[in-house]
Length: 74
Image (cartoon, rainbow, N blue to C red; front, side, top):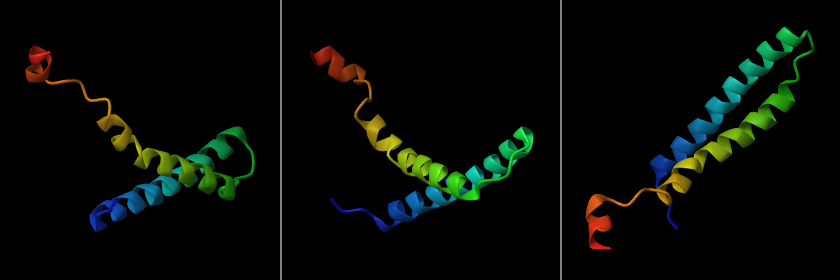
């Protein structure tokens, strides 16, 4: 399976933005709960979330509904 360069960069950008938004969410959540900010945990959790988010489009490709032409032929 070949991965195009643009697709690879798109996946990296998604993970980086997930990490950035995760740090911000962790900071806000810690301040609302009046706890110390755990940046390491936020980075790890949201990096995993970003990686999972990268595969959602590929999973959704397999669940596309049949078009009207295909359903009439069956």
